[in-house]
Image 1 (cartoon, one colour):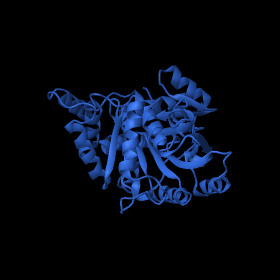
Image 2 (cartoon, rainbow, N blue to C red):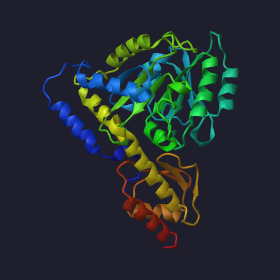
Image 3 (cartoon, one colour):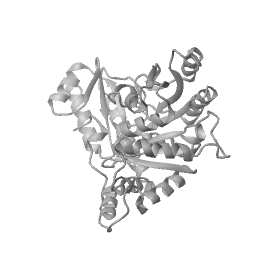
Image 4 (spheres, one colour):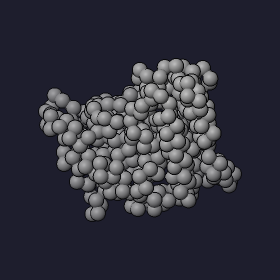
Length: 359
């Protein structure tokens, strides 16, 4: 009956089994020099079809903040959607880890930045003006805070605008699996092939205990800096290693995180889990659409639903013990997960219909 977040779930059995194996296989080198972590990097290189540098961390806030700190100086500006997690829900961590870089929130329907909006914002930006922060990074959230998804073409269009102005491109992929599962594209098509330099690759919301990874992609074919001037892979990775240590996320037993991530992507588990969460969101949205007086605020494309409900329905569901967030006026947010059961969805819908007088 808990639809507040996908963080409320436990861990997928496959991930728990992998973690147990990693921690009962005898002594291993520490601080990421273990074979599990090395294997994870190879697996993610295969998954993304390119050379990568992979840094496991324990939280999404650490992944985002440390990644951004590697991409921008303290006098830089990070452009993001004004509802982006880095701008609203990380207690100033990106600003702290970057040493004071400024986050500039842009408007956009459905949690997405339109290409024209970014182009206009950068056209107004004070490049070269010593009294102002300098544009350095574009950060995109995939899936967005509104539960919507950027297509590969949309990511590529935004990345092209950013690169033309010399900005690096970061992607907050806390729900990256939900986006890939919905679109049916390859992870490569949604990241580096579309111009993304660094991905915060999330697993905690989708079956892991506490496991995220910062994934740096390899740059251009010559091995030099990409078109936007971002340093080549090895240089970025070397700097990030120091930042991760200084930020308290260089785990001595790194295999604790690496084993979770390795099992997460093995045999397509991550997409199966995300696909189920998406399907449960579809089922819930379709059911609530039958309740008189309801309307979706945004298209349901991942596993978050923002729906306007009549107040008697909202109050009645909360009184019955369902847990979800009131969001904005009559709009509530409901989130499904890999662990959401169809019968739980159907029960909520049935109770909503009954409360609306149409059982």
